[in-house]
Length: 168
Image 1 (cartoon, one colour):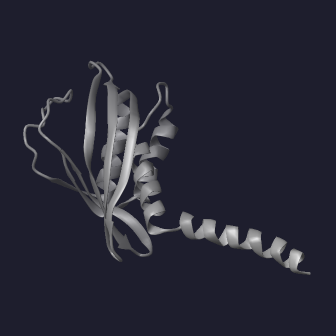
Image 2 (image 1 turned 120 degrees about the vertical axis):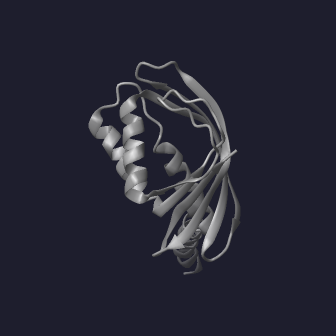
């Protein structure tokens, strides 16, 4: 009788332990950060529908408005980014911007991802991210950059949503 009880309880305890770990705040933030980074990854010859789905995935990850800060840099677009002032985009504008970027790109790779949860409380969290980004825009030379920054999350309607992305 005791052996049967052990054989029943042991798997049950393991499943409950796994679920507690999987749905812990830290694990959810790690997965959501990885999903956000994955939104920009695009293989060569990716079709238009796949590009649109990538942009649509962004909707589930960002808050109603997201503020993005990144350093001054030369750009392959018609205007260089000469200021590091934050840019605030609505959720729809962020999705449209990502869709435009993926439409203009031949490919975008993301490698050497590192994600670390820095701090969390009941309503907010900060996640440190770093990755190597390389892209080839149509008619432009290939560019690459080592990206390091922080995603700031807010807990809204039972979901962790990014409301700020700051890159150094």
